[in-house]
Length: 188
Image (cartoon, rainbow, N blue to C red):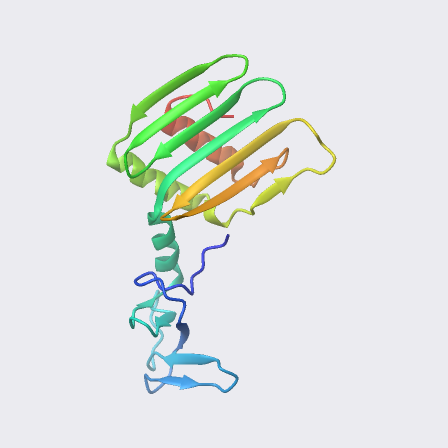
């Protein structure tokens, strides 16, 4: 799932149009059903790029991305293989709770509370890792054993899953480092 920047961050409507800068500032139709809103004669640095016809909110790509990451309420990540241990981290960002487990060669389970600042920083780091734009699946064809991983992201009432077998997004090593730092335990 790529972040849908055309979805209004204020009301969730998809009844939105692009803002094009020029005069005057009204909504026009281009024919073929494509509409746009004129935004005035001057383009603003980091100014609004989209307009919601439902609630009249205006926003840019950065606001849309920030809104999606702020909705993350839970992150559950696991990694392991056919041989050796498997690790799971379940982070409840709204409840500020973290559960870390290892199964396989060794069995261990640790729980801890998080600070609000830690949870907020984690969301910012997930954004830097572009987590929501990872592909849904990373699979190395023809390999039946090895390392398997899964990341579940709860965004409001929607769950997004990213997973792989012996293939990883380019940000995977940094993601594992973040999981180790937040949990204080091994993850990889």
